[in-house]
Length: 327
Ligand code: ASP
Image 1 (cartoon, rainbow, N blue to C red):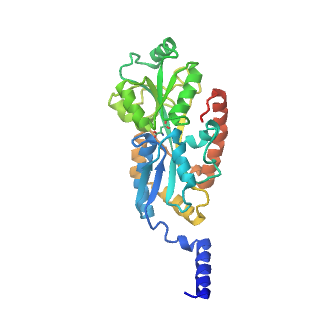
Image 2 (cartoon, rainbow, N blue to C red; image 1 turned 90 degrees about the vertical axis):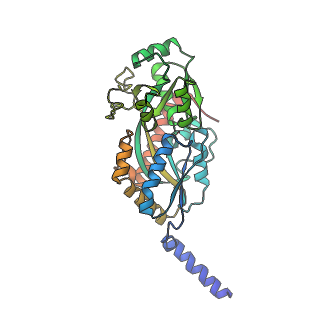
């Protein structure tokens, strides 16, 4: 190919790239949803549900890959560093808003290093205990906690995880100190709770409902402001009505791409996400686990970004008050 035609080819492909025509075929290979926690936990369940619902609108294979550790920051860093081509996305939760305040040295900056594809859902959490705990109500648990202050093991999915944040709020509201036992996700933590190796855990309803229904753990309260209309949880009081007035922890999940992903690709992905979240089967599956699908402006990239920025602000105050930080 002579110099002139090489230059012409370069010019045409550069124009195509900027005009978005180069992305007209997107996606022409499988897309990976990175989950920054261990398989089997609530984030993993949500991502796999989403992957299933995205396959049709994207007409492409959508895979889920777990990169766990450090409260979700290792998986988040992987996506922040990924090629901004729309093929590596992150499904992450409230940890996106808490990591900036909790971690002194983060290998990425939120919101700068990400494109926001939309907020997906909100999940209430539950306060659950090992099946061998004698307490059979929150009132009895409260007495047990005060009699065993400093001796209680409370599982979480790492510093900055939803279970960790809920536990911070719980200890501050109950003026109690518990020992945090971190895992790579609440799936492995749940196994130890059911086995009696740890005493308590704040766990999203997504993962807790099946174990509560199977009577493999004891449930004491839900952490959202309102009771859950799920058969397994309808009689379970909120922490707020149990004496921790105003206690309200909701865990939200969103989808992110690396900063610099082309606008045409972001628009294609957001459109597919909006279609996926309207799929009746997905809505049914998520609502059966207590999840609420987002349908408001937070499902748009701008609304999602604004929401996360507000949450970063909100949680920085809570974290500052708790005095907790991570390396
Ligand atoms: N989302 C985490 C997981 O899926 C749990 C958490 O953040 O507490 O394991």
